[in-house]
Length: 288
Image 1: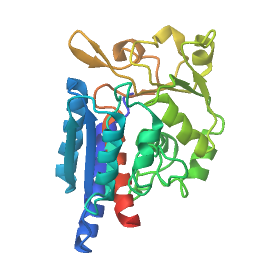
Image 2 (image 1 turned 30 degrees about the vertical axis):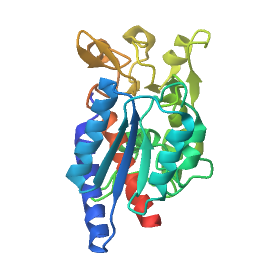
Image 3 (image 1 turned 135 degrees about the vertical axis):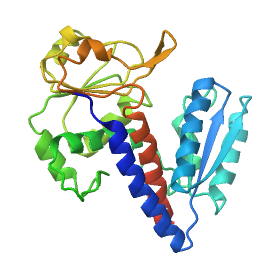
């Protein structure tokens, strides 16, 4: 059965609109600034999606596109200046960065209350992608009342999630900086046990066969029906192009009769990831 990510996203977007409206009534301005180095078409399309959602929920949006790779010092100076601007509520840096700029230290130049992707140490923000995964867990495993908010609160929902997932075997495939790694960090913070596999793992299919939940974050086809046990939950975070189409880390037609639930690509967890980015932005506005 397909997990209705589009329906979940619609509910989350409604909640964000309410929160933005409430802040505007208090004369609180909210603005996201997105940095992108380069002109890669897929990265530009991701920025376009973020801009569209900002428009729908009523948030200001600024896109800083640096087409040629700048010296590191110049890049972080611009980030620091933007962070110091009182009009800026939150900053994100579109990944991947060119190798000359690719270091976690770039996030240290963003005010900790404006670094809304959760990269900095001692941050109050969690990875939007990790929170999106927890929302799907909440939808699938926690009984929701009609008026209950699907947004995950790490303090309020942690015990319920831990209890619901206590006997579930969870596998994360991939450990990339924008996929498996941040999701694993959020699950660890939520005290939810999991096994992480990657290209170096010996006999990874042995873990897949036992898994109740598999989170894929690779960017190529890594899972097929014969690797899975009946009723498994599949949540895809990876993206690949095949025949001019965007696909995930498994073919949906192949696994649909084996999986109990699975996400589609496109239109799966991606929109939830972006909506949590804006949830973090709204929380940042409240802090500031």
